[in-house]
Structures are given as structure tokens and as C-alpha cells.
Image (cartoon, rainbow, N blue to C red; front, side, top):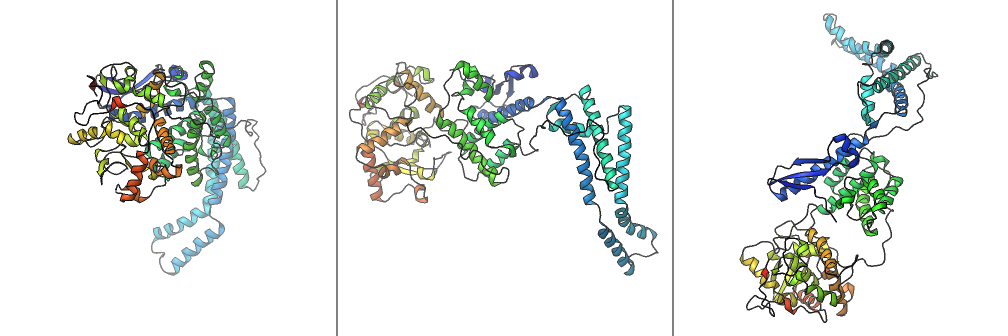
Length: 613
């Protein structure tokens, strides 16, 4: 499968790169957008990349949202402007001074005269004192005169073909409805003329109302209720994505950064369906239901597949009817809905929508487990394969399955083995610091925590825990590896383990490892992955006679407490954990060839000349 990259390097400088959607190539006159990220550092380039990509995507959506003006748009403009003219009059009349307010102002002037604040000695003082009163008396008359003068000016402009008076209203309508109208075009002038006639009718109604006649109706045949529905756009600052950024900053549930970034992409995919100008209050069950129906047909890794390059959600789903790529699982659909639903709950709590339309949209999970543990035969084949015994090159996954003299001995080697003998999650292991592995009262432990140096995270607070080091890991050379790093002054146990742009630790390796399993013939379809080692450890504990509730805490399946943030345990509790971990065993598993002689630091059985990485 060809992967699409958004990062490009030229002359040591990194550039953002995005293919222009096929339907917009004609508009832009090019097939690709590129922009320098102004850095030669890859990590910094990745930080700067996504704002540029998201900005381009928003721009594409904005261009798509614009459209040619139709006769229905003109009819809507006429009726809306007519109603706005009358509504403006009604609001203004309600704000006019009442007789009671005018009398009160006059009484205030009399009191000031009685107190000597206003005297005939100062003519200008007397005039100024009466100004507000005079304005209150004349406000309705002056307003009526202004409307009458504007009415006459509009009629004169209509006769002379002068549309300058109505242009501000016409431009505002065009912008609000995202219409493509050239200000010098005939379409634009026609819109101005029609809106002028609408305002003339509206002003005539207001003058009738000044005389107490509220029965008037439009006489111009074009001024009538529109049969079409105007396209509503979000108010400035209240687009769905703008509100998501407010939700992200508030982060009421203290969601982890990578989960929040995933939710941003989930919401972005919803916006891709409804449009970037879709008003937030229009998010309802119908919109979510239609989006979910598309998700059920959405191909796996669609954005990384060449066949769907430059396409939007609906186009991808339609095109997949031809290319027939596998679609995402029920679990993945629910993940999209989960991130979106959490955002909708926040919208509900803040009054943007009445209820969460995605709350009960989740699909029933399949009872069949998607991840299965390795059989002993599969593990024997895996640990005898080139990835563990020596491959051609460690720089690209395509070389892992080819036998050679390069030994991979970084996080990619240790994470599977530590998972096998601890049940820990891959990211928990990969982020360990050198000081997180230490001896405590005669037992070597791993402290899985967010404390210490580095950007650490755990799935839940209950995931912070102390896990003893299994004796088999010691025989495999784990403590020798640890001692070497400590001697060299390293802070992290696996210095080359990295987070991706979404903040996920060793995400690339987690993706590449199942592909390696497929390449060596151990995997077909779904089932085996890095997490198979974690499942295997749980099964090993069950084989040893423990119930799930007796060992769940060692896998990080408990609720968090402050105690779990610290790495010192009473001896009895530590002994209990040692007993649990030491009970993990795999009968007939053959890994003697991977063991290290503690005296020489070399492979115990095979003094292989392989070069260690």
C-alpha cells in the first residue's frame, strides 16, 4: 500500500505538501500545495506541519462551500431584506422614548431651573439643557423623515440604475451565503435591483405603520415569501472547529493530548461531511446518523491510500465501491463516535445544542476478540525469525524478514519480550526512564509512572504501578542492557523510542510489527499484534491459577490512587507482585538462543558475529 506523506525534504529544509483535491485542481491551477516549514529539524517540522495542513484543508472546504447564485438565492435575498427592513423599524420604535420618559425629562429640567442650575443669564446653557428633551420629542418624526428620504433616494437610484445605496446589504448577503458573484457582473446588479425593490416595499410598510396602519402587504410581485431554504452559515467564532478548540483548551475531562488530537480528527471528519460552515446548532441525530452510515463504509487507512488521494469522505466511500478496500471495524467506528460524542456533551452543557445526538449512536461490540495471544508454536517461529536473530538491515521494515548479521537490540527488541513477561502495554514500556528500573529490597522492578523526566503518560491513573522484573528477562540480558545505559549517563531506557505527531509512543513500530508477522507467515487478517503478548501474559497468569481480579492490578486495570504515583511498596505487597510475575510461564517456549551469558555479555549458546544495533 502506498503511503501519502505530508512532509517533504528539499536541500535539508522540510516542506509541508498536500495534494489539491481533484475537484479543485481547476480552481487552483495546480495539483499540489507546498510551503516551507523553515526548519531543518524533523521533530520541529512535524510540530509545524499539521497547522499548515489543517489550514489548507479548511481553505479547500471554504472554496467548495462557495457556489454560483441561483434564482432561489435571489428570492431568499428579496424576502429576507424586506422582512429585515420591517423588523429594523419595529426594533427602533420599541427603543423610542415613551411619553412617560419624555415627561420625566421635562420635569428634570424644571427641577434644575428651580435649583438655579439653569438660568436666563446663560443662553447656551439653556439651549443645551433643552437639547435632550427636544431630541426625545422629535425622535419619531426625525426617524420617519430619514426613512422617507431613503425611500425617495432608493426610488431615484432604481430609476437611474444606481445601486450604491443597497450594495452593503447585497455584499453582506453574498458573504453570508458563500456565493460566487462578481461585483461587476449582471447577476450582481440584478441582485442589487431586486433587494432595492424589497427595501422600497419595506419602507413603505413602515411609513404606513407610522399612521397606525399595520395591514399593508407588498404590492411589488417579486416581494413574496421565498419557497427555497437559505443556506445557513455559522456565526464568526462559532464554527464547529472553532468551538472544538474552545473545548480542547477547557478539556473538562482531562483527556490526554493524543486522545484529544484523535478527537480533533474525528470531529474534522464529521465537518468534512457536513461542511466547514455548518452551524453548530444544526448538529442533530439526522446529521450524525448519516455520518455514521458513511463511517461504516469507510476504508481502512483511507488517507494513506493512493487510490483515494485528494478525495473527501463521501467520494472515498463512493470510490471504494469500485476498489473494494476493507472497511474499518465496529470498534473503530465507535472510536470516531466516542471522540465526537464527548465534544457534543460539552456543546450540550454549554447550551449550543439541546441534547447529545451521538450519545446513543454507538454500535454493539462484537463478542469475538479481535486480538488473540500467540500460541507457543507461533512464538517459537517468531523468536527464531530474522527480526530477533539477525536481519539484513534495521533501517526499514522491508529488511527485517531477510536474514543477516544485524542484531536489533533497541526498544523494538525489548518491548515484545518485556510485554511477554509482564503484560505491560507497549507505550508504558517504551517511555520508561533508566531510573524507573531499579532494585528494591532484593527485587528488580519497573516503575510505570508519569513521574520523572520526559513526556510520560499512562492510560489511566490506575495504570501507574510497580511491576517486578521477570527472571527470564534477566537471563535475556535486560539488566545488562539497563546497566550499559546507566553507565553512559542515559536518562531514558529506550532513547530511540519516539512519539508520532499525535503523541503516540512507538506508534510506527506498533503498526509495522503486525506487517512483519504477515511477511513471515504468522498472520492472516486481524488477530496478532504487539498486544498479543499482553493477552498471552494474562492467559499465563490464569494458567498459574489466578483469577482476573487477583492479577488485574499488575496489568494496570485498577482505579488510580495517589499511592500509585510512588514507587515504594511494603515488603508484603512487593513479594505478592513478585510471586505473580514469576508465575508467568510458557511451557515448550524455546528462547535459549536469545539468552545472554552474564559473565561475557554475549549470546549464551551462539557466539554469533551479528552486529548489534
